[in-house]
Length: 331
Image (cartoon, rainbow, N blue to C red):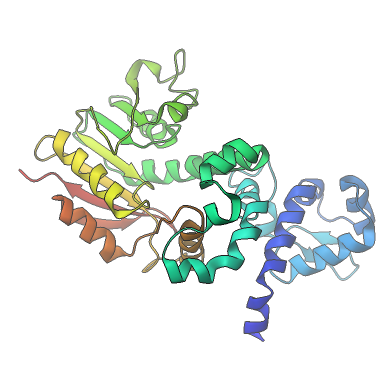
């Protein structure tokens, strides 16, 4: 029976997507609501909406009372836009139209060990996203922003910055991790390094006039080419999932610029030894399909780090799906 349920897993993903797109969780504002009231609020027919909610309740997303009304659960609240831990845009991102075209080609990707995206769409993943799929690109940006902001608080809570005066976030996206660290440590100065089009959308706290702008430097660049920043602490988060050569170049560039004894904290999802393996292994397969990348095991990441010349110290969980590898540049 479990295998039958797994084979129909697309139905569960589609149901989550439908609820997110319809805004059902936002419409359920009171302690409970009838299907008729919810249908009126989200502009659907009542009968098929009940079928959708019944399917979702099997997975703990919403629950049905004895009187036939529906109520929130911990998971359904995460589909609300106003929930601090909202996963609405992440749920939409994982079920965007392009995903339904590449998942059935997973056997081909496993055979070849490379992405199938160009074969399906005629373009590389990000080219298609930004040139042909504007809505998907917007969903992607919202999902990445949501994920980054949520994990940034966890990173800031974990890292001890005693003795650190300067920190650089390499490939740091819009700078949410860096902003959280600077807010927690008012004596620290930071640098955000990422591609020009990325840092142009940096967190408003970091830009001119922002609350942290006097302690921040924004540098546009490619960490695989050069890292022109000297700092006490280098953070490398969720960017070592490209091909191995890109990973090697990034880590070697860190060692080339960092002074002996500098700290390097590498933060990644792991596909083993993680409470969230169903999530991280699914993301690993999606990476294979869309860009040919891969998530790491604990050992594969340690191997890459040590091969580059860094010394690996303590490995700590950041949250259920991220681990932090404390490293130093050898003296």
